[in-house]
Each structure stands twice: as C-alpha cells, then as structure tokens.
Image (cartoon, rainbow, N blue to C red; front, top):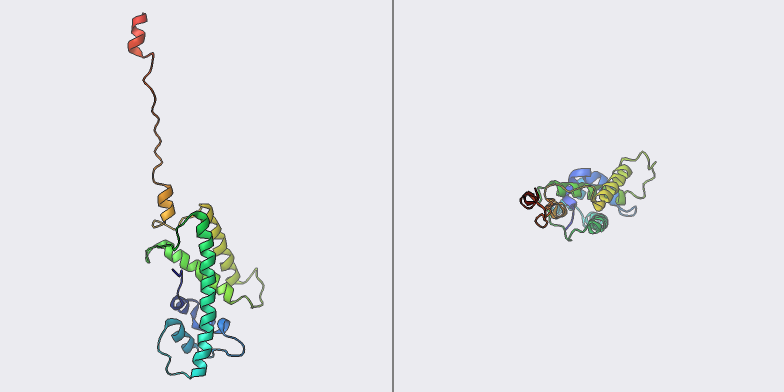
Length: 178
C-alpha cells in the first residue's frame, strides 16, 4: 500500500516543484499543466509526444522516490511489529501522519541534488523530523492514533489481580485460643 499517491503530491508541494526536481536536464518538463495532468493521470492529448515522454520520465523518478520512501517507512514499522502491508482506514489520523512523513521523505529524495544549507532548508528539516518521529514510533513512544493496531494490541488489559490460598490463622481459628 503506498503511503502517498502522485495525485496527493500534485496537491502539495504541487506540480511546479515536482516538474523542477524530477525532470532531467536533457529533457525538462517545462509545462506545469502537463506535469499536473501526468501526476493525476488526466488526459494529456494536448501535448506532443516528446513533451509527454519527458513528463513520463519525471513521473518515473517520482514513483521511484515514493517507493523508496514507502520502503523506509516500512522498515521503521517492522521494528515496532506492525504487520505489513499496514491497513489503516483512509480517514484515520494514522493514515494522514504516514502520508505526511512519506511526502517529506519523497521531497527530500527528489531534492537531493539541490545545493542549500541543510540546517536552514525546510525540506531537509521536514525529512529529519519525519525520521525522528518514525524512530519514536518504532520505539513505541508514538502512536498512530485510535486506529493504531499495535497500540490496541499492547493495551488490551492492564488489570492485575492476585489470588492466594485461604488464611491459615483467621479470626475463626484464633478465637479458640482465648
């Protein structure tokens, strides 16, 4: 199960950024509308075959980054003991958290050739934050919310009861020694 789709990437960060970072220098995608249509799987008949081929090459790079982000997330989920593929309801907070982390990781992977100051770069900051939260999730210090299958399994019952034998010297037995 992919944690984020290309259509969700078209929403945020948007087709313009994806076209810039996923294009090759030899075949850049210059039309933002073409990249948006490619990411969403819409009709692309208005563009030339060469433009569509460049968009398809960019889409392949995006899909590779999404697959790598998903594999990285799965690696952290397995450490916690989640059964993969993780099946969360689409409206759960856990699904939206995983989507956010996958977006941050995929953006970082697509922007890895960018020359910036890593300490001030928002894309690198989001990537580091996603890895930090995934580490907390793997350690059991963070939960995916109410639909988290591991949290429900680990908190099934915390009630502790002790049971022992009947007392040897109770009130009834000691009353005879008066």
